[in-house]
Length: 49
Image (cartoon, rainbow, N blue to C red; front, side, top):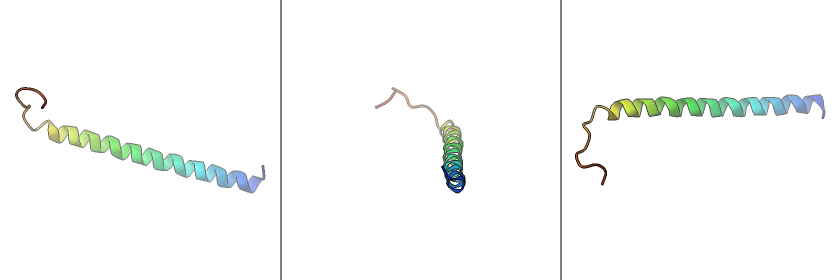
């Protein structure tokens, strides 16, 4: 494999990993915020419908 191609491939993988990490982190933060907000509401009587 040519050296210039290896740098391009490495950069592409690094960007993909960074994007997935950012998306995962934002989903986790949003999940925590939603759980915190939902905990403020009282539980329903009678279970799920």
